Length: 362
Image (cartoon, rainbow, N blue to C red; front, side):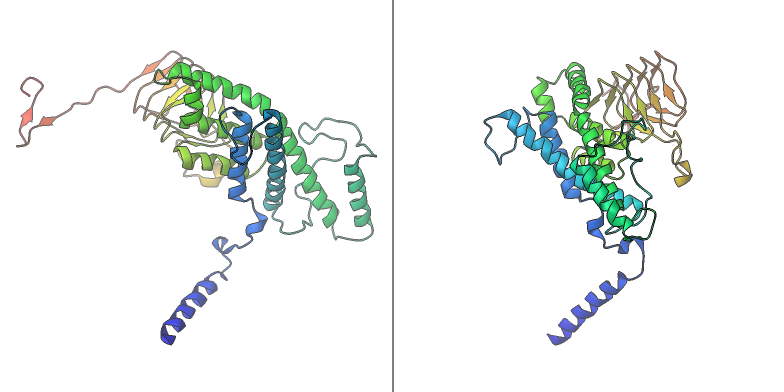
């Protein structure tokens, strides 16, 4: 038994030693990056806010729906602010108390989102008092840069608060778009009995919903969290939509499984996509050198793309009103109103003896 325990100890020590090699996979600073479980909780709270009549909280008995919505909205604001704060520090390469100013809001008096002048901060506000207090603390000699640690910490917090409040202010617009997606799904799928069935069971609408909320965070320059949201939806629905993709109103994915939408894809309004469709890049051999370039196609309004089709390339534009047939492979632009189909392949039939058959003798 002692020999076995010695072997176990040896194995444990060898594994622990492997973490000392300084590789990316050896990182252990788990508290300096966003929490996947909390991100999933935020997604579920957002679903309750977006579709309050369909997602319920079993922890509370509902007497006043407005009160429940208030709790859910404040819960999202609180949790998301903490996660955005963490991820901003994470992106800046900081750990613990930040001591550099690589990520910070614009100077006081400027809108963080538009750059427009919004007037001087309220000198009597608690937030401004806190900021000035920390600034005085910096001036007393704490810190070793143009922005000391306490001031930098405050800037991260304020940036996170501003981002999350702006995100939440966009929820009504987000719900407006999702209402059109719900209508498009009902009109596009004769198997749908009603909208309740779609909200409660259709993976396409769920993936679209999560993508639309993640896309708003992407537009607000929040790193990492949007992708965590959409990959969670991907794991649940089998639909992979990059949060950077731009998707217009009345978007409908039928069945959904296997759909891939790349990051620089632009999709217009009233677009219908079936399972297994790829809107992808023509080549990724350039790796990171391709970052920031348009690598994925543009799909104009009122386009239908049937199952298994692949449309590739940043210069590829599918013209308005076109129909792309199943299994088509497209790498160049298609004029508006075009129908693309694949010529029927020759099918060969044989019986159990390996003898050729034709449709006339079987």
